[in-house]
Length: 208
Image 1: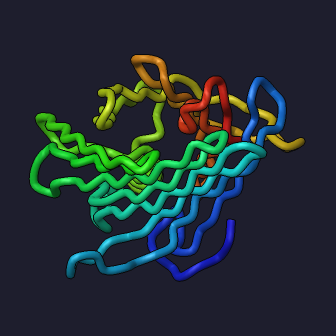
Image 2: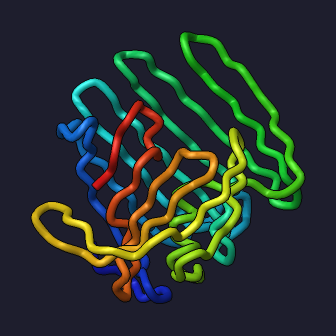
Image 3: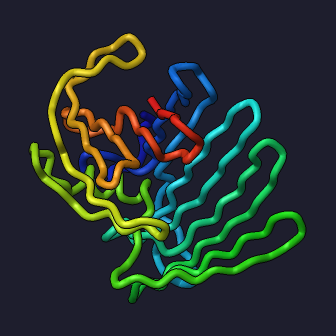
């Protein structure tokens, strides 16, 4: 984790977390999640989170703009190259209600989709920062995760030691219902997301 400007515990501006991507236990690339800091979008203050995943035949780069107070997304800019299939995706979120406009450019064609829900929608990486900052790390604690494609409930189900990269960490395991994500948070002061299953959307992959 890189040092940065003091922000609020348990993380700082400039924090950069690097992951090994594992698919069925085999190394498949690298991923990073970086809290770049404050920026301005349409005259509004935002925080910028950058997610990057790279492997031999894929690249996923995402710029995620979130509200500083809530870590809810206002805009996501995503560049994808999966086995040579290139896509540019932009998600524009309505900050007052549950609506997102998704614009996709692929193969020389532009398509647009609007999704509306009863409440504002989340981004998984924005959620990770918000939960680290203000979430309740107690067994049984559950929260709703309202994604554009699916509504989930995430619950802390147990606390135990896990081994990653030859080190042992005491962790809280958060699991989603319906099943999609498993997230292990370090029980230490930084509450780092040590391992994330399901975030890449490419089969059975883990970020560790």
